[in-house]
Amino acid sequence: MVLQKLHKVQRVLVRRKPNADKPRQFLDIDIAKFMVNALGWVYLVIVLNWWAKKIVRWDIALRSKTEDWKRAIDTALTREFPEGVRGCELKLISDNGSQPMSVSFMRDMATLGIEQIFTSYDNPNGNPETERMLRTIKEEFIWINEFENLEEAKEKISKWIEIDYNKLYVHSELGYLSPEEFEILYNGDLLKQAV
Image (spheres, rainbow, N blue to C red):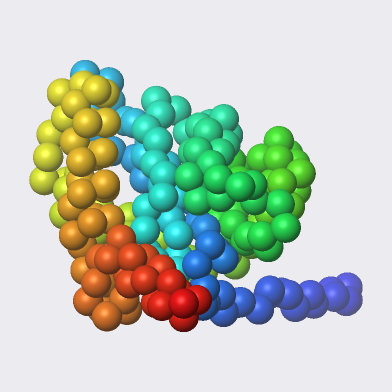
């Protein structure tokens, strides 16, 4: 008789999602793909500010490469941190995809002093704000539109994100304010406190 050693599977505990309690604390980066008639599948990279639920940057690419993700996060950082990101204790949340886990992406984030937080494997609640926003953009905009070419897709998505979502889309978690209204209210309250 041969004795067989039994091995128990070791699972990583599912981490709770972090909560943003101040502006510019957590950014999340993720991707969605959609169809453009003249091209086939294209990829929409989104960078979301968790605190205000605001899409701070987006980019459309023909392939989902690390460079596309780096371009999106670079322009998001320029927009959100015009004075520079070092020393701001920014945390970047993402899934375990090949782009955010690539050596060059991780090296760039470490150089900038950005802590990367990866969602637990098979844990859809690891970045629920971003997953919910991607579902919203798919259900309320992408799936009900057809795009003939890349330029049309970029133009229409830009309008939807910058106006329909960031300026007008209300969130119950933000007191039924849009992301930009929430930021304006917060900044106005800070100004009042400073005076």
